[in-house]
Length: 471
Ligand SMILES: Cc1ncc(COP(=O)(O)O)c(C=O)c1O
Image 1 (cartoon, rainbow, N blue to C red):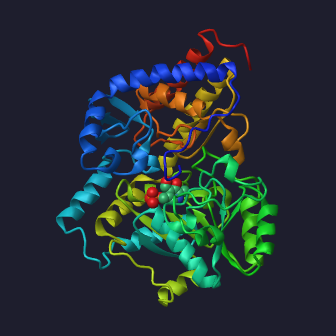
Image 2 (tube, rainbow, N blue to C red; image 1 turned 90 degrees about the horizontal axis):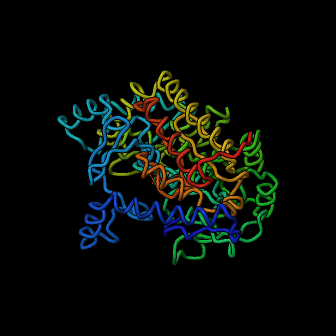
Image 3 (cartoon, protein in one colour; image 1 turned 90 degrees about the vertical axis):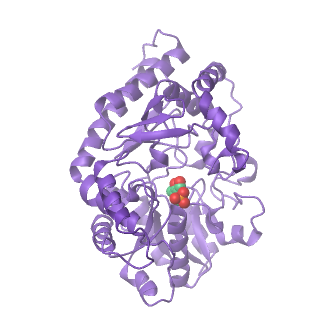
């Protein structure tokens, strides 16, 4: 999502489906607002002291912020006391679910022993060792968020290569530091040609040099990377990439793309950093590294690693990490390796997100994928379902390969689906077509059957109760 509320991305095509979606959205928004009355009151009270009435801008999603009272297992309860199956997962954090007993135990034990010293505590050793094993990179450092992870990764690539520029993919979000606030969700009119996208600042008043330092390429297009490396010869330190795009729905890399990218970058003296803030631990125990077999020079983690406690980490090759060990690049932060975070991360990695846990996620995922796909076919709706590990999305368009396809994908589909899920008791992340579901190890088959049932309620409302005889 962009730093401001994403502009409506309606296409110009006002087909009968889109007209019907407008009507359904209006109806469902009224139901949503009636169900969340206490949230409206809290938002109004908060506005007196909190800019926009929320702690972070994306918590305020249309048609209104939902305030949460508590979470337990796979469920959350909002301020009106309404219970939901939680597939929002706190924007992909809660692969462990809520108040998992192992996290509660680890955090409670640690709280009693003091929560911050700015000196290492022994938990950093098993946590970094387990990350080395999963992500096949030998050395690690900690920080506190995805933003800090991608910032550290880019600093490190620049120091190692002694070059100023980076390559990034159009439509990728890597956090809110200046270097990566480029072409996150550019408008069609300013985005430039598909093969050679413009570098468009994503926050107001970003000084122009930041745009000049980020060279933008389309996802999955090796020729564009090759051209950029040639045109900016000896200037590009490295490329940061979401190996599976996860801020414009869910897009897997084309076969062989990531391996070829690594080879191409290395041939030009540049590095490859995987932003696995969403994919790491979410798609598989070892994230995109495990799924694709490609080990980049740097992996950035955050989100699921802390089991619900703020966290971040980078792993890298010995060559790159030597620059940190030698203090050429001083990777620092008051809260890095915070004892509470490390205790929660230890429980998350060693006790909860085990191989058996990923088997459980696979069983739930197959119910969601086969159930939702069968409904799309039976009702003749466009699209498909894509899912890995704990993550997945219903994509209501036939083709989503990169940001330009995403621009053409009408956001009414995602909005209407989100509202039907919400009003049907399943809390998906807001910003319908950008986000994915997150299933946790504490979800049950009943939970995910609820999701599938809501897909059918939506499909039948759109197409009438009599399904088209398709498929
Ligand atoms: C791929 C990716 N990278 C980085 C970030 C930034 O993480 P954080 O919000 O923890 O700073 C996000 C956040 O959603 C993300 O999706």
